[in-house]
Length: 531
Image (cartoon, rainbow, N blue to C red; front, side, top):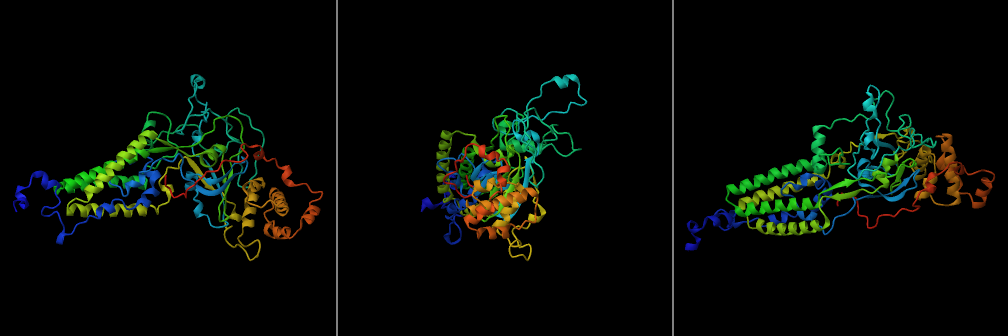
């Protein structure tokens, strides 16, 4: 028929018709399933949702598998958390979850059952503590420089609190604390955990930012480029997500160029619309983390926290109150770049663009469908493989200096260490004794529910604290527990008659902490990395 003559077709028909010669595959085959490939892989995308939308790279127009993973009716105000019992050794804080960034620093799922570890976490730069001004050295400066007021350094992207002094000094891993009252008169290099060792470079000198840091900060939050503040924990510049985003942009450009060579206008529109949809939903979900800072200058207890997993492992983190507020006891909030009303509007626009692009993908020519389908299969495989990479490679955690200071005798708490059927076999009691031996306190045990509240356990905890303060590392904690558990309440009263509970000699600052009971998160989702 005359209508089937290709010579009579218009120029537009050559670009947007899918029934012309060469538009179909061999034997009339078509790849309409390419529309399904475009929306498969939602779980892989949702796993990296935070990192994808944490920098300006989320605005790049590109094809991305399952863009509907970002189409949600509302945005969460906080980052996902991991379920575990977290207790402040001195602060009295008791929570049922561990923060997002804290779990990246020390993944709790990597702890073996009944394992024990001690970490020391402090700020790499003392000016990163939030609202703290580090005194500059006055040696070698003129009188005008001494009298000139210094500007406050602030690196957290949240609001600037007033300057304050640091918590008392933390000694080594033996758990000894100096509880001498401190005064709010300024910094003392001899009483500051982050002051460095003697002979170290003078603290307080501001280091110039490298080009990598400038680009990384701009990608995390372009509004900070003209200020002295830096994002708290930005996505690292060479994050695998950023590398894959750039690759997706290049792949999208190649698909459009390939479709133009084959005069496939439908494919050009489909790829362009789905790329624009990813930019729209990325803009709507673009965020930055806000860490909690102190807002008062009063003296507070040390920020040490101890975490107990469901498998019976204990993790003791020695840190200042500033670090504890940022990573543990504080709230890790998400600050978005667009308002809630604008978010809903952008979600609606992104949904419309995605639906139109899916319809167009099913009407592309044969050659375009092959390359579009192969591109989505490749990207799905790359995003799945990216889930195998530890999350610490996605975020810039250089804000913190992390050291493993686990005592040598407790390194193998999760294994059998000797032939002793009690003290040499891994157990919850032995690991609990290791934690008490380092902290030299047992008040946190009762607050966290790590031990039952019974006369037998109270007696064992009293003896454990006494032996810990004596420095007795050879105490048979498990054997003594077995003996005490066989005692009746009358036997316990007779055994402790005339003996003062050692816990009464240790002043527990946490009993004065408010609130007495923390509000626990509700409807907590598993920490799979999704927003």
